[in-house]
Image (cartoon, rainbow, N blue to C red; front, side, top):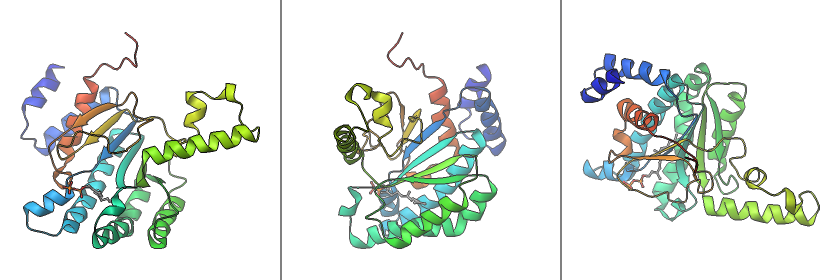
Length: 259
Ligand code: FPP
């Protein structure tokens, strides 16, 4: 612990200090599922008088670095909120660019993800996504399906209220057709109707850019998630920030409603 405090004080992290922090973190309980709301790309670009899409492009590079470190730390699932069901309201050129990002990202980094044993998955409404976006994700999912390292889960065209509502509709349908019985409906069986049925609930949520809200992200799944917010804009988010979030998580007491 003393060692940890000494390292915290040294915020001017050299790479050797980062290495020491990684080793310290790995000795303790590492969150299995980390979810991130990658916010602040637009403001990052605006500060530099660049178009908003330049911020998203820079944000994409941070996705790569964050994935690499998360994998190294032994995090099992990293869910990244890349596009919400509400993001279609943005200007067309920005939406078009955001829909191209998965191709750009996977075009550059898929070989690296394969080599690093990362498995790509996605949650969200696939039907409304352009074919080129879905093809890129589909190919990456297929090419990485046998990997058993970190699951890199993109939330794309994802919205939690719609997800919950759809789950309720499916439950009603299954009850009416006799597939499900009302007395068997509980938190666990209901969760199996959600898009996240393959995943355990997030242990840690990180949101960048100083906004302190959930923005329709995994509302059911985050009932007992630990939250960590930072003013840092997503394109400026670095390894030190991820370690800081996990160190904060490791200092929390999780009681899940108990004592
Ligand atoms: C929110 O910032 C960010 C998004 C809606 C998009 C996030 C996408 C990335 C970081 C790239 C994803 C990469 C891949 C590989 C899919 P904002 O635009 O709302 O920022 P602002 O609040 O400052 O305007």
